[in-house]
Length: 436
Image (cartoon, rainbow, N blue to C red; front, side, top):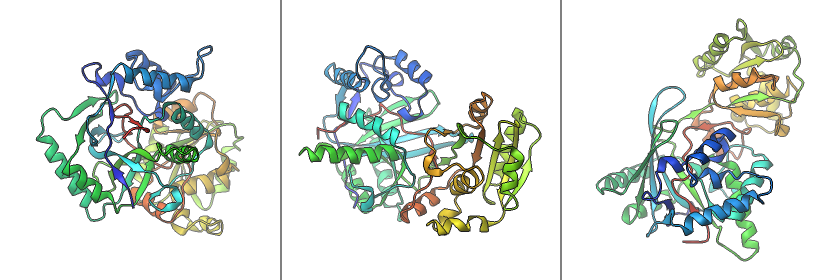
């Protein structure tokens, strides 16, 4: 049973700052250059605390982040809402595919449960490095700075109907909403929901199973931090700020995350393709210029509904090709390794186990530091041209229904199997863990 509740969020005072100057993308998608630009825009930009920087001679970066966050509260740049609220979030955005959509979500507190308890289900594996970073930040700030994204099925539409009624009621109240347009052009509107409308949403969500869409590392870290605090007799970290979205929401969309392989000796292109055949059909592109590479990524989208199609770029040969799995018997050995038939046929499973492991020898459990993840094909090819990578692997998006099916079976996909876009902005609302 999902225990969802309102809380007194900590928000920027619009009389003290422009929201456009202080919000930021979550820490895990911020490049160093963009983070520096955001910090320069305002001394109160959330990047100053959500992405601590190690500066020689200036002490522990996490403690500095905590001191900065505390100073914002003391100076009333951040102010606590007077009453417990849920926060309705509408995001109007244009995705990487060029289409405009509106996604509706809800920020709330969730009582944490371990992943094995069946209330919150993961779908991806995690790495240790990011979890250690977030744990140190939680210990220092004792606050949740950005929400984990959770999905719920809403098979009967009950939650969606309650969200619609809450939005209609909120629209009738002038001055309740805050709106901000970020650097990517996404317009985010945040509206506090309280009273009977909030109670109806809490009740509607009570029987929903929740699926982690984005934030696996943060959720696992939140549970570890809760357990650490409980061991000391403290229950102040029993809850976590989350962003909830229905799987039925028309604005919920998943885009692919491509892989760039480094620090691994990649055999010659002909040898790799020979290992993949005859299970895979190979379609070559002419050369490795921008047009050829763009054609390759278009091919992936064209065949997304037909089967398991991947784009490969071999840096040594500076050549692109498209490979398509034609013989499903090629994944039969994965069933003997414990995969269900459905999980064995996922594109990310085929990529990591049949292509990267079986053909290239890259162990899927030892990819930390060997694979970089990029969502933009153009950015991926820019990096590939730098010579730092031996192979680029391009993939179509995992579908939401595949995420649900894998999670419900208790299985997980490789890291970065999904790219839910957009990520909710950091800085819309904060949750200090020790306060109601």
